[in-house]
Image (cartoon, rainbow, N blue to C red; front, side):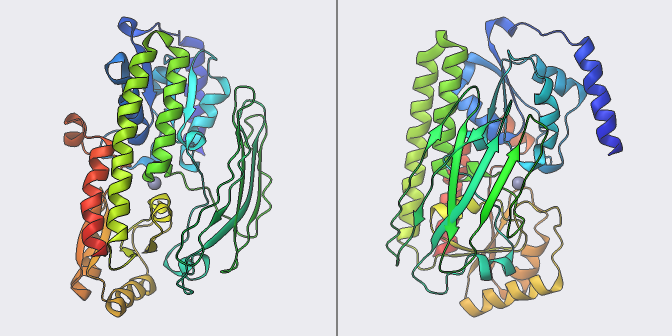
Length: 392
Ligand SMILES: [Zn+2]
């Protein structure tokens, strides 16, 4: 709280002293909070923009807070890109008073779908019960209304995975009214129980929440881990860039088209791996930021921690349960995420003989990777190989 107070003071000082800078060298100024935001901007804008990632390379993205210089940079930007999740609460304080000339883009708003965070290993037993082998029926009831300066959401979604057939019925409605986005989301899990009725109301940026929850769940912010979501993010970002810089329309559209082509190839490659796999179970001895990915490819996942939980030391029961699972199912490969301490993976690997491999959720990259220009598509291509080995 103390930190927040200081932070707010810094912001008010900045509002008094900060003058909006003009575009540098005629280039669009884009500020992205984390790597997925930065990558999307780079993919679509390329050299036409001066793009900066605020999150330091290699840093933990969920505990990131901006420096006064970062805030100045955001305020002097033509476009500010952030994820839109719970871990970026500080963004709300900035958005409240941000100059209307700064266009704001949230990955979660642009994503094809946004879902609740999955639970941990034990949570899977009731939340994602794949016991009937036939797959999953999902029907969530979700409503999001961000009124005033926020975004109104109206999604209508239906997912039906019937008896291995993976039939999907998507009813999708996106209405973007005013400057916001209207989404209505409907999801329910039948069969395995767990019907969720959620209501969220964020009024006037005030972050007021009216939750009607059977379970308290946060929305999972790692939308970029699914190629389908990434495709949608690139498409929407291209529209926004064309809107604010129509002179470079052709460049943005060409860049977006070529990135989407790569995304589609990656999607096909993942599908081919899953179609030819001997198992559809992944064991993650780490956090679980790849829920969207797992749902997209209909994978059964057992992970040590939900989402990007702050804790990275598993309790004895979780460790024991994961070890039992690996032994019982004869799992040969377990996964850990990038920039992880890999402690838990080592323990389980030593105990079971399973090989530990890194699956990169593209949260952040190392300085060396950043300097080498590593892209989301390159990361995902390496994940294709990892997935192949893990599901073999
Ligand atoms: Zn995360």
